[in-house]
Image (cartoon, rainbow, N blue to C red; front, side, top):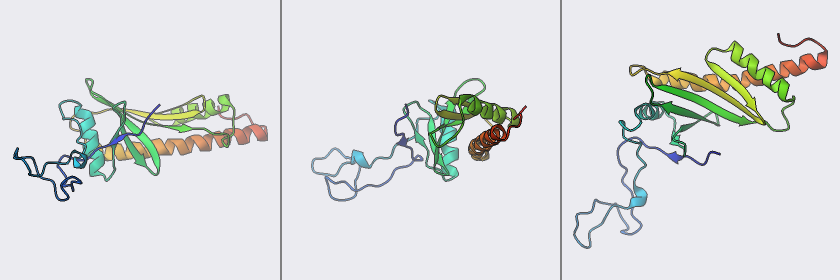
Length: 191
C-alpha cells in the first residue's frame, strides 16, 4: 500500500520565517541570543547523486519539465500527470533500468468479467511496443520498462513514457468496450 510521498525540491535552500525568532532565519553562529535556522523551513533535498544516480537524474529531469516529483516510502519517484498519480522505479543495475508505471482501481462502473478485462490487457500489451498491461483483482496496472544509458536525455523520454502509460489506459478502456460490444452483438471478438 502506498502512502503519501514526501516532496522533493531542487538543490538550494529557501529562506524561511522562523516562528521562534519572528523574522528571517539565519545560520547559528554559536552565540547566545542570535537567531538560528528553523528546521521546519528547510527544504527536502533529493538524495546524493552517488546514492541513487538514476533516481537523481529522474528527479532533475521531472523538475526541469515542470513536474513536482515526490519520493514515496518504497523509494519510487511519484509524479502527477493529468490528475493521475504515476511512479518511476529506478534500478541502479548495469545497465540502469527504470519502470514507469501506474495502477488504477476498477470500480463497479467498469463492465466486464475478469477474463474480458484480461483479454483487453493482453490486446494492449500485444499492440503497443514496450507497454505491459495486466489486471490483478480489481486493479489495472500499466508499466513501461526502459534501459537507460548515461547519455540519454531523460526529459523527453519521461514525458513521452508518462503519456504512453496514460494512453495505454485509454486504449485498455476502448478495447474493453469493443470486447463487450462484440459479446453483446454476438461477434467472435478479438483474435
